[in-house]
Structures are given as C-alpha cells and as structure tokens.
Amino acid sequence: MILKQMLQLIRLLGLRRAGRMKRRYEKALPHVRGYAATSCYWTLLKVGLLDAMADGPVELEAFARDRGLDLHVLDSICSYFDGIAVLDYDHDARRAGLAKLGRDLLAEPRGLFELLYAYEPIFTDLEAMLRGDKRLGRDVQRRTDWVGIGSGRLCRQLPYPVMIDMVRRNGGRNVLDLGCGDGALLMELAAAEPELRAVGIDINGPTADLATRQIAAAGLGDRLSACTRDMFDLPGNHADLAAIDCLTACDTFHEYLWDGDSRVVELLANLKAAFPGARMVIGEFCKQSHESLRKRPTAFLEHHLFHQLTNQRIETADRWRDIFGRAGLRIVEEKVFDLVGHGYFVLE
Image (tube, rainbow, N blue to C red; front, side, top):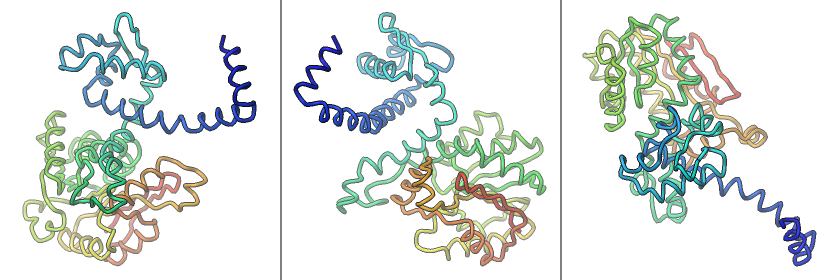
C-alpha cells in the first residue's frame, strides 16, 4: 500500500521534485520537533510527571486527578512523546513510563532544558525586541530562578567539582559564595567538606529564597545560609563576614561586563581589600571563537546566543587574566578547558 502511494506521488510530482521535497522536510523536521518536544518536556517537568516517572510507570488518570490536570491534554503530550520514543505509553491502560531516551534526557541534559526555560521569555518576545517594541529589562526578562536551577544542575557536572577541589586544597573552611543561585555550590561544598561553613548571597530575592529552601530541605541549615545581598555593596558592609577565608564565584562576573570591565575590576580590588586574608576561587565562561563553534557547534553556541540577547559579555581566558591583574590579584592556580569554554582560577 505504501509503495503504491509513493509511486503515485512520484508520477504526480516527478522523481527529482519528490526526492528534493523529502530531503528538505527531513532537514526541517529536527528543528520543528525540537521546539514541540522541548515545550512538552517543560510542561511535564513543571507538573512533576517526569520526576514521578523516574520511580516507574505512572497511571495518567490518577496523576491528572490528583494534580488537577486536563487528562486529554496530558494524553496528547504522552502520545506524542511515545511517538518520538521519549516515553513508553500504553494507551489502553493510560499508563506511561520513561523510555531510554526519556531517562537520558532527564539525566545530565536536564539542566540544558531548565536553562533554556529560563531564557524562554526572550525567545517568545524576540520579534518585539528586534523591532524595538519591547526592551530587555523593561518589558522582557529571563526567569532568574530558573537560571539558578539550570545553572546549578549543569555546574554540578564539571565546574563545581573543579572549584571544590580548589577550595579544599587552598584551605577554605569559611566560604562566601557570590551569586549563589539556587545554593547548589554551597551544598556540594558542604557534602565534600564536613567542617566547612558557607554563606551565599544573590542579588535576586526569589533566587536567594530558593537557595534557602534547598538548603533547609537538604538538612544543612546549621552550616549553610543564603540571603539577598548585592555583592557590589559588600566591601563596605561585611562586618558579619569577618571569619571568611575563601570567596567563590561561579559564572557570576560576566553578567556585569556588557558596558566594559571597569566595574568588575573595581569590585575585585575592593573585595581583595575587604578580605585581605582570603583567597578567591573563580569559575567563568571563557569565550570560544565563532569559527571554532561553527566547526563544532556544541551547546555553547546556544549559550553564547542567550548571553548576547541579554547583554551579558563572555570574555576570553586572556581577558580574564588581564582583569584579575588590573584588580591587583595574583593567579595562584588556573585550569582552562577550551573544549567546554570554561576556566577556573585561584586568586590572592
């Protein structure tokens, strides 16, 4: 039957045209499917179904009833995910579980989806921003709490292990984390070093509140804390942090480079003066050339786009070395991974 229909189409369109159309649709489908699948992934993640499925298949009728969800919409999403092998869905029993692809997407790549969700408002209003009808900050903002969630999950895979090793080997026991996000680094530090105490600050109130909730849920409130605070006001108001012997910052300073680096240079110099006995352990994005990304288009291509659209400047490792030097800081140790566009520095 299928072969007969294909021959009819070829006779109608011609072999060359039919073949060309097929190839073009095949090239377009991953882009269309990526958008649809990502939207469905966000939805099932936010209502808790993907995490529920991590423990085994779920009865959709009961899940929808308990969560107050529309069963028809839920059925539609799960049917689609079954079609692209994200879920295994028994339509008759309305019972769905994660397929191998679904389990893979819920593992390390989960942070990519969470971070993209943080920037979703930018893409929704991209045409309005392009036409000048809406402006970043005034009319359009990223979801800062999801920036913390996505970044924290992704950083657990490489940045945090590298930074924790640096903190431990440089004697850090009372840590101040600048731009703490959802508190992930604080909790990873506490898990690695039982005697360590740490304070996290973040300029965004909801993000700092999220860190406080995460710390409490992990049972680490006796050693860790987080609060809303502007690191630029910190040097002149830090009497409560006298015991700090190490400052950490992961992917924090690049957000303040759009109009030049003088503000970050001044901040680092002031922090050095305010905490003279403390070392700094800093992890930052290190810019990859467009040509290298074009040859090897990793997820950093999207990451660079996120930052460009939200006026955040990513600098090269050499530029970071220059910034540290102008702030009066000496590099004690560094590890730069060009492959993933990230660098780590111990400064004093």
